[in-house]
Image 1: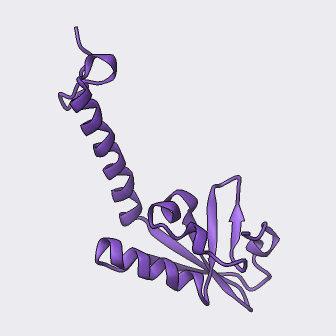
Image 2 (image 1 turned 135 degrees about the horizontal axis):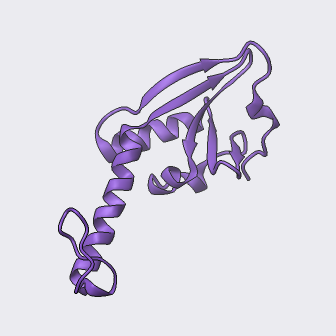
Length: 123
């Protein structure tokens, strides 16, 4: 007896190697598609701004090692706050190059100093 989910796919030890590989590719594609449809938050305060992007998605876009020391990394949330002057444009260009469209971005302004300034900077 094989373990079959509602879509009719077999999983685990009952799936053939080809089915297992297809399942991994499907899951990876679903993860990436989730990031494409996400709306990214552009946090601003009186002096600066940052785009909040999951670290995993930065890795998918292959920009993690290109991020400057002016961005911030929240290890608890696994989120990188990309600094607006250079790193945000790096994200924007990589997103457009990979998916052929612009990321959806919403703005969130703080009249006080942003909480992001209290987070560890990227290295």
